[in-house]
Image (tube, rainbow, N blue to C red; front, side):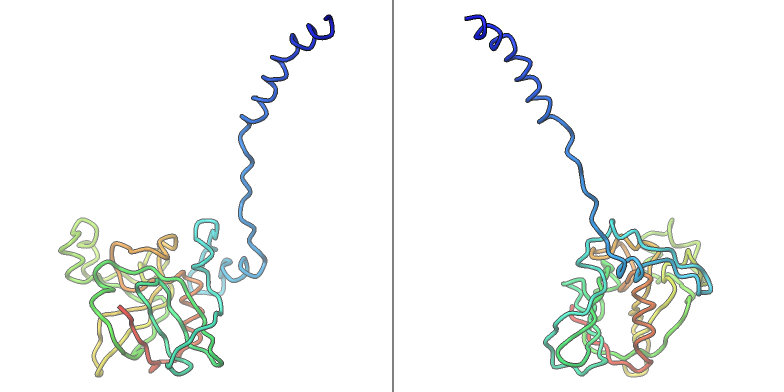
Length: 216
C-alpha cells in the first residue's frame, strides 16, 4: 500500500514533466545551402558597382539556376521565356537547358509573345519608366520620367537584354532587379526580372542576335 501511495503521489509530477517536454518549442533547422550555390550567388566585387550576395533562404530552391533536361525543337543557344511557369530556359546541346527563375511583371511582361531577337545588350543600363507605369503609379515613378542612370538602385539591375522584332524595340526586356526576393512571382511592374547573379550569367552566355521565344 505504501509503495502504491508513493506511486500515486509521484504520478502528477511525472505527468506534468511529460506535458512540459511536449510543449517545448521545436528546433527549426535552416535549409542547408552548399558551397556550390553560395559561390553562385555570392557577392560580386569585380563589377562597376558591387553586386550583393543573395540570401538564398528567402528564395525557394526551385528558382535557383540549374541545368535541367529540356525537350524542345528550338536550336541550342535559343532563349525560351515561359511566363506561366516563371522560368527562363537557355537551350543547350543534348536535350538540356540552363534554367533560371524569373519574376513576371503584371502588365509590361504580358504585352509581348512570340519570337524576337536580342537587339541590344547593356551593362548597368539606364532606366526610364514607361508612360503606363507613370500613369498607374505617379507617386512612385513620375520623379524618374527623365530616366535613372545605372547603379545599385536602378530597377534594371546590373544587366539588361533588349528584345527587338523587325528591327524595332519591343519594349520587352530581360533584366536584373533591386527586389530579388520577388523571383517566382507576379510583380507590380517591369518585364522579366532575374536575380542579379543570374542575369549576369545569362548576359555572358548569349550574344546580340540571339533568338528569344516568349510563351505567354
